[in-house]
Image (cartoon, rainbow, N blue to C red):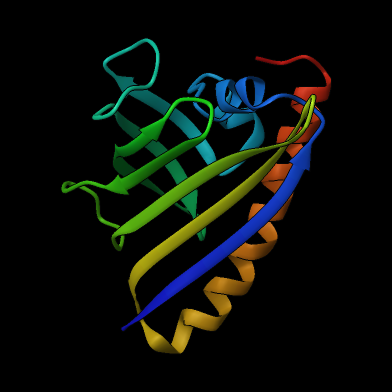
Length: 149
């Protein structure tokens, strides 16, 4: 088994507060992550340390449920989520780090680590996810530009 790591960085012409609000808005998530069919959050409201998320996601043509929990949080700067028991997918960790790079500009560094991927498929999974992630963050940029929040 292998770990698959995918990293992506992009800069948005919006302040960290705007970008953070968008990446933590469960209602907006399916609009910039086309593989996400449905998402829910417990408890409802602003994301806090310990917030739990459920995502019904299409992976390789199969609908699956992923459960995650916020394990690190710095409002407008960082959020990290880890997979929780009860899912049928390999364990994962997702991290977003926001850094102001100008008066109204934010660099977003994204990291995804998936554990337990069969070694023979690791390179193909990494390649596929890298393309999907780049597309997702392009969509997020379009939503931000359109004023979606």
